[in-house]
Length: 538
Figure 1 (cartoon, rainbow, N blue to C red):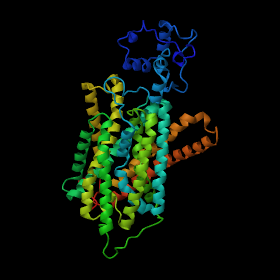
Figure 2: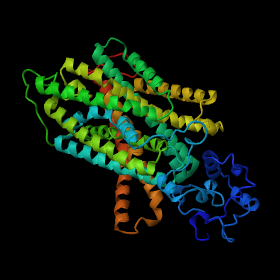
Figure 3: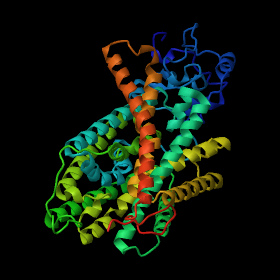
Figure 4: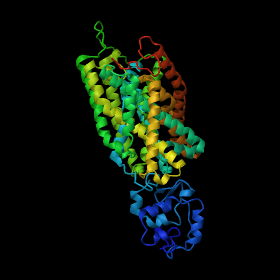
């Protein structure tokens, strides 16, 4: 028996430990015993528990290497299994089935939130990413030119795929994390966690505001500005608030398919209408469509267009939160990621090319407004489910982050997945706070292109690209030049950091200058924040 891997450490005393009295020996106790050991608990247990008679007499507890023991991840000394219990209980088959999983806040106590499988994850990721960002891509091609625009869409899409995979690599090393700020704490302690947490929440506030602005544009377009624009934004935020009340990400998957169908049908209507009737604002004296192969934009115009393309890949900020509720993220996230990017990148390219080549110099942003008025109104009506689902998934990510932070402060982590008055009160309060903040931001920047570019430059540049490079350097700091592959990846991640810094500084300046120019444009109806003026595209 000494060579049996099940007895590689001191085994539990089945008599002295009440958890193994024959009646309470269930999975929840085992998980609790393994995942919640306090510092110093190991030494105490070694003193009180006698070794199993079949275990080697010189058995000692050896800490896992790189945070992994028997396929199960443990991030720090406070989460080490005690006296080999975990290896004693876990068979080879079980280790294979659960490789990469580890207990986190969403599977301890109350209802188990870790129920999302591979296909459901793919649907959630598509719902998270394919939304309002696609509506700005034809205008980006108009500014950059057909060829540079296509290169930018594909290139940034592939780059966002790589940075998403880096998040998974970090998650595999530290599988107890439930969001990006948790990862930041591992890299830079509580201070970096707070900075990243505030940044992530503001990023999601911007995203919620962007979606609210898009809904107000849609409602203004369909109703011929029947209500104050701020009123339409308020209606959108109330609807989003109601949709965010369910607390599990698995709920998002239920609306994912209708959301995807709605965006596909809406852009298809616009493309057919453009092919049949041409753009709505085409001049009778010059009906010909001009296609620019390589554009010559100003610095501000070109950078703003690139920022709007980045916005189409803004979903990375929520990926870690989704991993935390997946059944087996180590195995299932990569297929789900390929489902997402295999769907979204070709869709982005096709929609951008078709709408731009059919609209030419008359391309509008959001792109649904490029079609004749009646088809455009129909398209805006059909796209509403997609807008609502996108708002829900980003809102849910922000609300859950704030919810976890507050429940930790209240020392009520055991109630995070329970249906108690405290947990529901905190959840509803977080949802209210988030959507009130999004409503204020939506009315401060009520212009579609401007809020997208400001959001991309200030925060999405980091949460889609830059922060993943930081995590990569943390994982590989002592082997940056170990071989040619590491050298190449070191160069790539350095360039990603430079890109994020450039977009963050120059991009913010360009976005703010562009917004000021719009406010000062006498031909534009919206002249200031918090206005009732019509922001529709007709």
